[in-house]
Image (cartoon, rainbow, N blue to C red; front, side, top):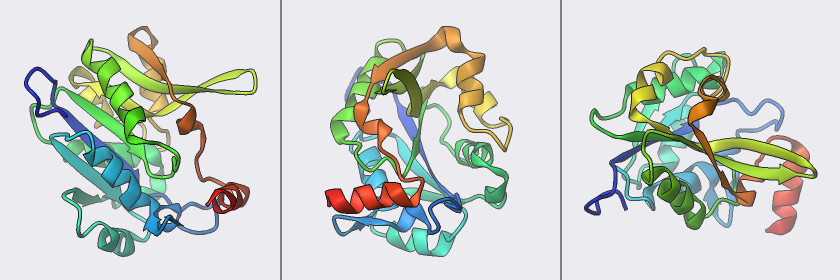
Length: 204
C-alpha cells in the first residue's frame, strides 16, 4: 500500500518479546488455524506493503525467529526484553530505516485483527501524518484504546528513549492533543490469560 504514489511511507514494529507470564506459555507461538500468532501478525503487517517490518524478539527468540524464516521481515533481539514493553519499542524503533514518515506499533496477540482493520488505521493516519492514530473499542460502557497505533516521524526520537517498563501509552498520554481514534472492535480480543486461550480455542 505505501508504495503507491501519494501514500506516506510506513515502518512497522511488531512486538513479540514478552514472556507471557499470565498465560503460562509464549503467546507468540500459540497456533490459530495452523499458524502461530507471531507469523499471523507479521503477515497482517505485510499486507500494508510497508517500507519494512521489524519483529522484536526476546523470550523464546530462536523458536519465534524460526517461525518467521519464510517471511520478508527483519528480526531484532531485545537483550532487555524482561524490562518491559517500552524496552522492546525502544529496540525496534532504533532499527528502523531512516526516512519513514510514520511507525506502526503492533502486538502479536490480537488474534481477531484483519487486514481491513490495519487499512482503516493507515487511511486515517494518511489524511494527516502529523497525528497519532490509535485503535479504540468499547468494553461494556467503557471506552478503551490501545494497539495497533501509528506514530508520526517527529515522535520517533521519543519512541527510541521511552521508559522501558511502560508501553506506548506513556507517549500517547503525553501528546493527547495529537491523538485520533479509529474504532476497531477486533482489537479488543487479545491473548493474555488462560481463559482468553480457551475462548480462542472454542472459536476455532
